Length: 62
Image (cartoon, rainbow, N blue to C red):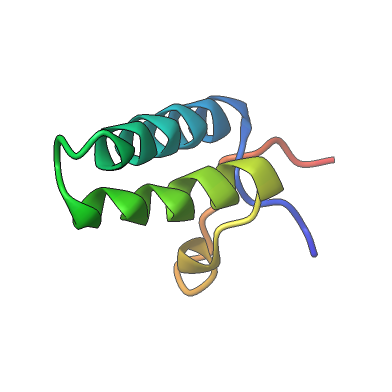
């Protein structure tokens, strides 16, 4: 699997995912905050399936 999520994009995804999960865990934003698992996972893995149909790559080519 090739990476298609670059450095800054990964950091933003991980931070957003952790924030959403934390807000959901504390009951601040409700159950929908658990959707933060998706950006967290894509940030950690470095691959986003939503980028495939559009041919987007935010990572540097090797």
